[in-house]
Length: 80
Image (tube, rainbow, N blue to C red; front, side, top):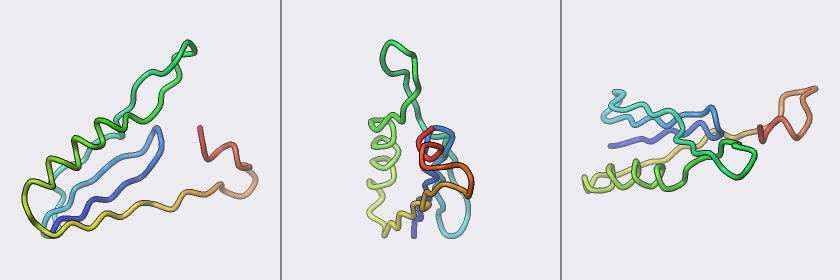
């Protein structure tokens, strides 16, 4: 069994566990966007990570961290 854990966001990560052991750990792939050179998540690279695991024909579970603002930070801190 393969489990893919995702910590979403610019400073997040993607972890691939196989049979309970960490096989791969990826920093969240990012790219520069627009004139302000602001970083954003690179969806194409995330797709590549997933496709690499989908070729094994094994059962895959994907777990994504629930994101929320911490008390006192406000809503905008969730999207930095």
